[in-house]
Amino acid sequence: MKVKKNRIKVITLGCSKNLVDSEFLMAQLKSNNVELVDDEKKCESVIINTCGFIDTAKEESINTILKAVERKEKGKLKNIYVAGCLSDRYKSELEKEIPEVNKYFGATDKHKTVVQILNEFGIDYKKELLGERLVTTPSHFAYIKISEGCDNPCSFCAIPIMRGAHKSKPLEEILMEAQKLASSGVKELIIIGQDTTYWGLDLNNKRGLAGVLDELSKINGIEWLRLMYAYPSRFPLDALNEIRDNEKVCKYLDIPVQHVSDNMLKSMRRGITKKNQIALLEKIRNEIPGIAIRTSVMVGYPGETEKDFEELLEFIKEFRFDRLGVFTYSHEEGTAAFKLKDDVPKKEKMLRQKLVLEAQKKIADENNSESVGKDFKVIIDRKEGEHFIGRSYKDAPEVDQEVFVTDNGKIKTGEFYNVRIFDSEEFDIFGEVIK
Image (tube, rainbow, N blue to C red; front, side, top):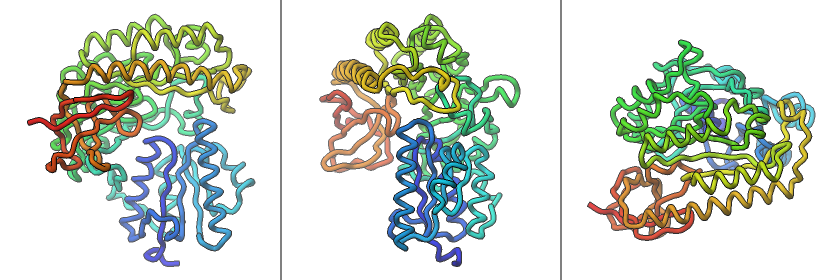
């Protein structure tokens, strides 16, 4: 089968970091005259970039593979290739249990994986495409990954098993990639990595996130920089100056705390105490007026008592995070926590998750009510019905709330507008463009 006639669909599961990996692969495929299609019914081959982080993600990945196998058995698909975290973590088991897949690839060495996949289609890797991506998000924003892997010892996390040790992407490569994205029309860069605060330690023995933000802000065309996945332990405080003083850096920070009980933080191996974590969060709020802080927490971790949970819930109510996600603990083999007894019943985990969500729902409703009458700079992502849907500096794509903007006949997607809020709901606000 000649490459030019090979229609391929790339399916990406899991996080934004996986999405970036797929975009690099797709740029290589497209440059070699491979036809990339969105409709599975029209493709001859499918590449599934899997996630293996927690049970629900693994289940989704397995189900996606099995659906592809079913199509292959019916003669509707010729080739199935599986890459990503699940494939890296469970390759031997998958080869045995689902042999219908043509080949499984890992996740640790992304460049090597891309090369191997290209070879399956008789394609050579094009070095001149370094930094090139086929952006699959709306054209005005893109994720930019500044590092791979993670060196943090969190007891519950399987990421280091799948992605390996932390490795910073050289600054010149980050800037080259960002410049190419800006030249293609990207206005908002969302900075990601397993731990973005770790950047630079393996390059010059110093955390250099502030410098990355500063250099990215100098790129013409980039109007917003948004920082995600900032680890609280040993947070580089000079980055706060960039968030506060640099007009292009959104006053927004995603900083997953996971828990607040000292008992849980110690068992989770988070490298920080309750006192120091709260002090950091308060410092961030005090030094950057108006900052939107997003976090994620975990409930049902082994040994989490009712007292531990109540301590977490009470802190959430007191601190009032602007944005919050909550996960139930997933017992992952190979992690340090796997040696502990998964002693919180599933029903109790779900109840605790529900209680956190209810608390955050009330906080979000009250915060949004306070936004009524205020003006925000909003970037428009898309149109739905009678509204254009956008985001303020307080919101990252997909994980945060949205701004519904009344259509005045002059609004365009991908553009920024000043919007005055006139109404609110629990997780959305409504506004109109003002001059």
